[in-house]
Length: 338
Image (tube, rainbow, N blue to C red; front, side):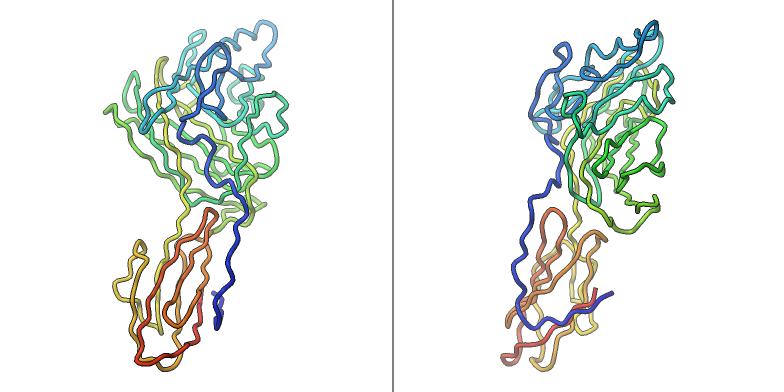
């Protein structure tokens, strides 16, 4: 907890251009790849996969002739529907990703069977999504259409550095990998009602030794996102469908509390930003506050009439204003403890 004495208005904060939301996260922009199956712009699936199977195993490249995805009516506007299929008696999960899909072996556990951020564009599909935010959570909408209920789908969001980061089906949130900064592994079950539902999951952050940390200490360069109709490779049934829409990275800019001279601000609510405070007009006002998010920070601005607590996160700021009323004009000193 640090202390800061503020006797003057703070300078204006300038924000650099940052990529704090995913590109085409609402699936309103579309293109065609492979043999005409529709995929959202800046997203990828089987149609542009890198299939490296050779000889008699090249039959495994069969699913790569189509994306097995379609544009559908979404939660709002358009959404993307992915569908599982079958090949030689094996289920092929429906997949949508921001990365490059790669198939090098018929063995599911082979680490060369993966999706990765192709930051150098070696496959020519621009399958790497730039991203610099450190969100607290991710929200998204999905709708199931499964052959049998109780299917568990999965969405993975990897925040990583400037490397060709991989997502492999056997990876867990704790799996160590160079360039790992944060992730959200999201498993969600078919409610079997055919309706759109919003799912919410928190991000976990790691240091360079792959230890969980309270707040992100590094800034990502890319995000690798992967949706699948089933959390298990070759799981579920042929024809299982999962529709996806409206992905939002959430940056919590709420305060945890506000104390003035050791007393809680009356009626404080993290979602309420306007307050009034009456004091005698003598002495100093000591303001204590802290953000809910460990990835946010706060600053205090003051003048003769207001205290302004500014919560600053990667996507902008939120301002709490406390209007002061005193018995006589007094330009008080303020201190902040975080």
